[in-house]
Image (cartoon, rainbow, N blue to C red; front, side):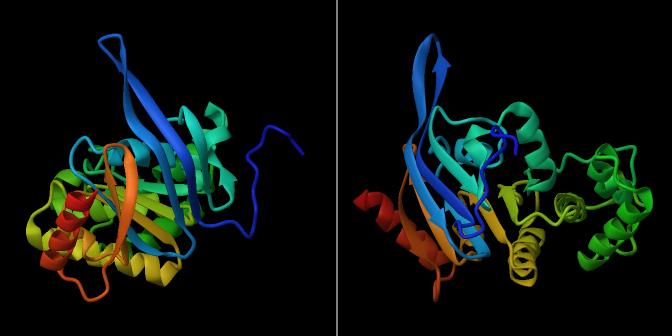
Length: 257
């Protein structure tokens, strides 16, 4: 066995973050973005990381998605030691071990919806026939079975985001991250997408983690991890709470922090 490969454990939590710090340099001075984050999720489901702009939530998501490395601390995802990956391992992990959906849809304008979904498989050298069948299945499940041959400019914002979700699910990863996924959508499309992410988590028994600052979005999740000033300092269980209830509980947490 290659001793440099990420360590895996079948009994590990789906997501474990311990003592993670991250600093950036601005004007020659170190600026702390994360100040010792601890976070653990043991069960599949739809979860949120909620915080205001500058709280560190997007920085944390980038570390969880192996898009950046922490300065200190450990990150384990589905038993894999993400914090110790080199660039090659991180690239492979992003391709197959997780799915990522961003606020910007990041679709290629010259490709059809189906081709956009197939693209990661093509880049990985997967058989074209298998990728075509898989992409069609995913788009059909997401309500886009009649849009396979449409290019992005012929799709609504909500449809484009669903194409991006299908692409993120191509390799059936155990974890899906969504970074403010409805920031460019209208309210109706946003509500549909939040519901869809919850359905995906339940149907596929996978972990879906959404970064958001919106109580209406976070109310769709089973638990909200609240981040402020670079620390996850509490959580909110959403059972029985609507958007207004989440907003009130969140503000209470901020006042008591």
